[in-house]
Image 1 (cartoon, rainbow, N blue to C red):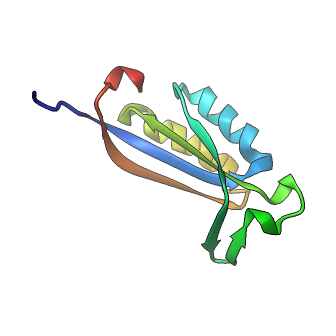
Image 2 (tube, rainbow, N blue to C red):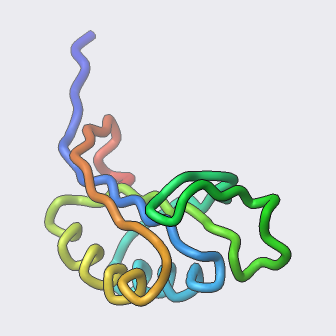
Length: 105
């Protein structure tokens, strides 16, 4: 059996939970077919270490959004999300990935 893969772009957004709905709206507006959202439990960045347990409310919780898109859609999706993330605490990354079922993305 020969393994056949297809090149795609993986976009990962880590942002404060209150901005999540705006990030998802931005992705939906660009035609992204799907994404996964998971809580970010702890981390370390320019401001030092943090944990979800250190916060008293949802405003300081962080979430991670991951989506895989066709390369033709990546720039549009990243631009739309960056417009939201640039005004928030958060990061945005894009990487090359290979997938086996290209029709899902």
